[in-house]
Image (cartoon, rainbow, N blue to C red; front, side, top):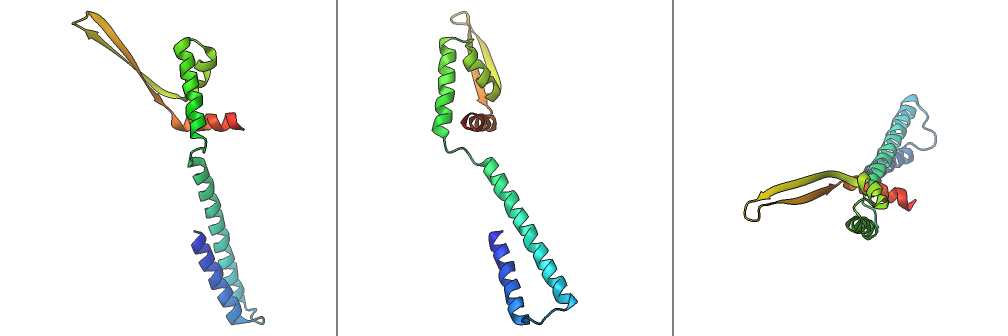
Length: 131
């Protein structure tokens, strides 16, 4: 888009140079208005794309995010009902999947839990905590 914007500007400057200072007709004004409008739309598109890109870019502090979440999980391993760990983790967990299988050989239930994290929520939480 920046290249397209620069192309429009260069074309506009060539027209201005070719016409000289005395060209003031209605058609010329309409041409310049149209080009001005085109430049304005391109600038808005560039700004919108930059905002969208900024929203999707990962935080530069991935290590900090991983470290913070590992500390929360370690707290839960110590005390499974620790509110300092439960509240922030609850906000970033997308899904918990609990597997329960009967083991015939040992005659007992084998249980495991799988956690799927919501990565956009993790990044949003990091931005809230960092600011």
